Amino acid sequence: MAQRGAYAKGIAKREEILQVALDVIARHGYRGASVREIAGAVGLSQAGLLHYFGSKDELFTAVLTKRDEVDAVDRTGDMLSDLLRIVAHNAEVPGLVQLYTQLSVDAADPSHPAHSYFAERFTRLRAVFADAIRAGQGDGSLRADVDAARAATSLIALTDGLQTQFLMDPSLDMAAQLRAYVDGLRA
Image 1 (cartoon, helix red, strand yellow):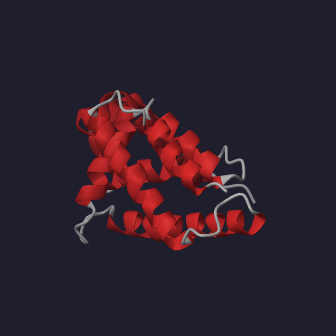
Image 2 (cartoon, helix red, strand yellow):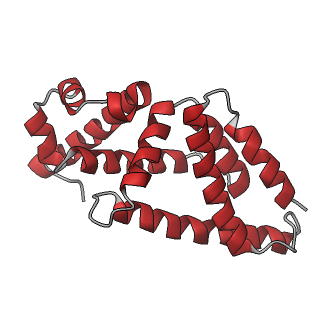
């Protein structure tokens, strides 16, 4: 059944805010993206925008969730190739890399609004990557002598670490660095 009335409008406005916030943060970064600019771009006051998201950190956590949804759209079924594509794309949106990196550090505090997002994300990705690695080992495309759970954890650590290095040196080719590791997993 279709959503109706104020509820449907609220959902649509929230989605519009997230799309605009993705664009603003991609252009201006975490520190350069203001609630005022995002609110103005969607025709709201700051207070109006915060009606949909309780705080700037909650908005930015929702932006990361939206970014994950967008990244998931073009999956090919080859997890390692998809990851390489996403990492290559991240170099084109340094503001979102900055947001992710900063919030991941801030979210180490269990009281931070993004804490559960990151805890759940890391748990989910470790499982998804480990399952994909095991499947690749089963079909012979990935090395059988690799511990899938450790390799999954290493993939996450490597991609996150590369993002931090990229922010310090934008000439770093994150995808090339990751590809070297991935090539080592292939049979």
